[in-house]
Length: 291
Image (cartoon, rainbow, N blue to C red; front, side):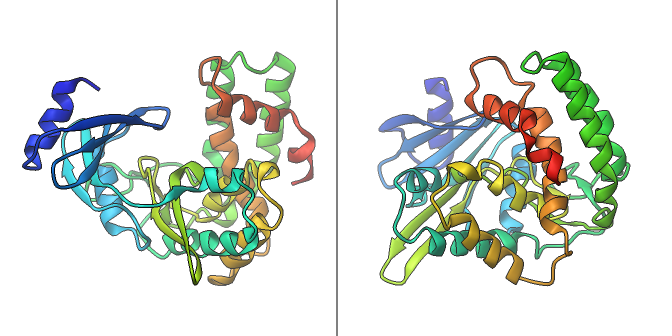
């Protein structure tokens, strides 16, 4: 971020920057904490269309930061108190199952918002664009990703493409679904606090990949790197997520097939990206044989 970008955001909010601190951001955007005289705000630069992301946040039925400003290539949101879930999980909390239930309860509620059709949002009216069914999109999308990555060997790429082709028909079970999906549910995008009554999610962050589809993909996003979570967390998450409403009998498996889109995209990122390396390890592992 250039200093003048922060000053521009601050001036639009009626203040001046006292201090600017770069925060951990996503792959496609930069996130900066701006400390003004009377408050702290978070500025996001780059990424997807800020107007679409802001519209999704205003519609989301879960805790999110207040949207303060939207520009063509940036947005400003209110600072929210809380600890990033990834840090909490690394510290191995003693009530990991209760924490998982709270996170699962909140993430399940995202799908309460319904749209007229599935698809990715084309503008701030949150109108999904016309698209082929998910089952028909998976293989062409994976082919494109495998052509761009050098993280996997030719044999690994071919084996992953075959597995995706085998599993794509599972997506016909959810192709008519048009519910709000976050698209990037992971511990780095969730803030939590712990009080006398237990854990509470204070904010779900980074909605730039949101779309209309199936909530099962969000559950799979959370479970993707679950081997590193403390015991009990995913049990609590699954219990609360499944209890929110009647689910398809194979909702977990369908979610993992939806996650094949994200895994395939992740491995196209440049060398040195830890998350992309983790995704490649999952693609190579036996997990996908047992869907």
